[in-house]
Amino acid sequence: MKDAMDLILNPIRTRIIQMLSTKETITASELCEKINDIPRTTLYRHINILLENNILLVVAEKKIRGSLERTLALNTEAMSQINTMENAPQNVLGFLMNKYARFQNYWDGENADPVRDKLFLSNSVVMLNDQEFDQFLSEVWGLIQKYNYQFADGRKARDISIISLPIDSDKKID
Image (tube, rainbow, N blue to C red):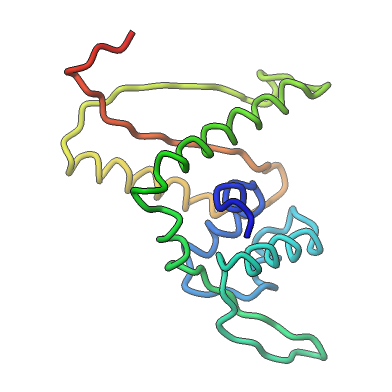
């Protein structure tokens, strides 16, 4: 099995996982229709990687015109095993290093243009109680859902990362 964070942080596999996190099941063909900016063969390769590593499950198969159509579901048990308290420090490090590597690849590219590409970093501290924070996260999730992970003319994939960390007021941060 590949490193779990490498598996789920790949941009194409992240989109597949996101799509399946919003639906109970979806066929591989439906995934290809929804994520239609990625070549079908590439998408199937990433689906197979997720299947081989038990992140996705085949919950049904049906013959359609000589082909086998698979219905997929997210393996929530496997995802729960990845997202444990024991794995948390390594998962955070993997997440941050993945972002660092993607920024480095961007800057190493010949055509890096942060203005054209709307590249930005932002950090905000907000004052919210737990209920307000839950509402905030719900609204952010709603915004992400609004754009449905689906390619259309003029749209391009953008990687948006949100990190929440409590500020420990007892410790001095320089």
